[in-house]
Length: 500
Image 1 (tube, rainbow, N blue to C red):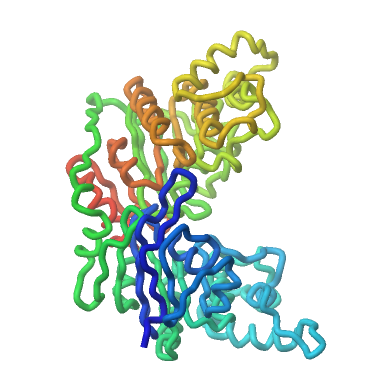
Image 2: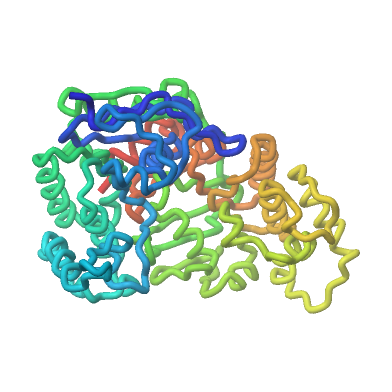
């Protein structure tokens, strides 16, 4: 009998970025197969190609021995494949029952939605989690009013409602507590007994070894190893994820002057996706925030910038306590924030390059009147430091490429000469040369005394730039790495092996 799924030599390129150079995966019938790898290794891209939401450039995929060339999600669904999305695909304004069967509503003989059957079928699914769902999760509940774990349960039920033969679970347990995970695993074992095949992506290695039959590891866009779970251990898996060469990466070492006080102190910070985080950041230090994506790093940075205010905890700048209720509060105290999500966090759409660079300086310096000629040279210098290509400061920001737009947004904050710089995966969308220029600038700012808190989705960036790394898992700090402990192996091991 052919395997349930066989992907071989799958490739995918987004513009100049090679996301997959040799993706391969074989999943047997009735098997729970883990797909693991560090941030950016290509595992989510491979799964989206299998699910038909991303088109591949090359390679082959077979389902039950038959070629699969999906032109969209509907083709993969017709082949019995369902994908649980790491970023939830629910509609907040609809009810739980409507979300579970959205796009697959049962119909009457006349072609209308059979609401009675929809409610009955959705209720049968929901009852499987009833013991651990918590209050407020009911068929008629609006998804917008549910807690994160309840929304994750609804997303799981939405996948199961399609009755697929192959399910891809991409971080399906991320928001679930241990009791909910146990119920979920009970469900997976029942599906396995029915012959359903599953691909399981998780940052929790203890879960992988508990539920999975085999493990495939990806690194740098290609499949590098496959293990039988019963015949391997966590150390071998982590080594395969990291690779040998990465062990030789060591960041610069910084000596703090004796008796020097920290510049930024965060104590017991909590909020959305953040649990009791405390840290100290010294002048001239580059402190990294490691771990897999979505583990609270961005939530902390946005909280410190006042974009998504912290629910509890204290923040001090030197001896001064701060109330960061909005970004202007942070900017007035010399705190700058650079985001990799330029569309959401950075761009002033329809405005000039000058206005986009100047926005932060106006707030920082509390300017009422502006003399563009006096400011233009400062802004040109900030943009030139990143080798930004632009026709003129008066041109609209939309006239630039995505990479050059990101350079402008970085220049915006460099022009304010901040004392604390918050970097939230800032190098998305800029080329390798611009990244090198940016990192040189960051090192230069640190050498001049700027305190830098840096999150990157690429471990190599953290290891090459940071003096210390705080590893995040589930919204909390799970480990602190410094000195000789700052290696790719330890960073990956802390992100996966020490997961709660």
